[in-house]
Each structure stands twice: as structure tokens, then as C-alpha cells.
Image (tube, rainbow, N blue to C red; front, side, top):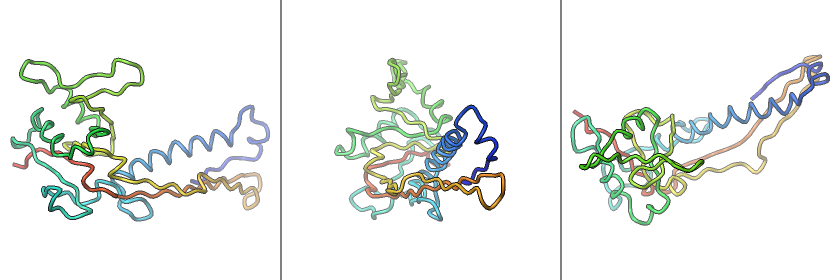
Length: 207
């Protein structure tokens, strides 16, 4: 990021302009990082989890670097039974910290799923800060996940994120343009798939 401001504003402002700019940069880069961790193409950004090949092959015979994707039982429709199948596709060793991952539009559909007694499978968090749950597992909203795709698993074990030890750095330049201060802000981060058995994905069966 390369925000600019005037030296006059820095000198006379009643609040910390540089600090505010740093926070804005941090917020924006955070959004870009999250997007990269899901859908990044690996070119000057991490290769996102969804950029890896997804196949129907089970863990025992699937090649490393390929993620398992299962289809719903009914064409073009995902229901509660499919979610149960998804959870049992994940090996028990990964289930303790497993969560559901989907975008908000997909969550709207999932919230309407009911069991045979008419009870909703979705459970809203009743305590402040507590996550909503689905089949007893937390739900994480990730807007970079496309529609009609639901992930389930232990993301921390599936995808590893590396932050450079230099952290976020800001270099001020008040020389090249008199009266202006440029703030070159950099941060190095990477990520990649490390365990292709730790995440599973569910999609509607193709017509």
C-alpha cells in the first residue's frame, strides 16, 4: 500500500493521521489476504485453498494436493442428509476442530434445512461471541467461497499461513514530493495446502 497525505495535515491535525492510515491499510490488506487464502492464484499472492484441484476420489487413493469434493444425492439440490454425509467423509482425527465454511447466500439456504420432525438444523449462537452451529459444528462465513459450495473440516490443519517476521513495515517519504508524505507500507505473507485430507467440500449434483 502507498497512501499519501500532506505534511501540513500531519503537523496540525488533532488526531493521529499516520496511525489512522496504518489502521486503514491493515483493514484493507486483511480483506485481500483472506481472499487470497481462499481463491488466490499464487502469482504475487498465496495460492488459495480453492485453487487446488478438487476430485471425487477418497483419501486412500487421492493424490496429495487434491481435495475431495462430494456431490449431493439429488440433482441440483443440497439437503440435510448431504451435510451429514459430508461430515462423515472427514476422518475422525480431523473432526474435533472441524467447522463449516460457506458464503452468506449459501448460509441463507442452509438455515432453512429441517429434520424429519420439522426442527431446524441450524442453531444460532445464544451467547455473545459464540458461533452459530450446524449439526453441532461452528459455521464460518467466508464471502470469497462461491455459491453452491460448502466446505467442512479443520482449516488450520489443511492450510498453513506464514507471516514474515518483519511484520507490517511503513517507510515515510517526505522528500520526493515537497509538502507531501508518502507512506510505503509492506507486509509479506504466504500460505498453502499442507494436508489435503483435512478439508472436504460439498456441491450440488450436476444435471
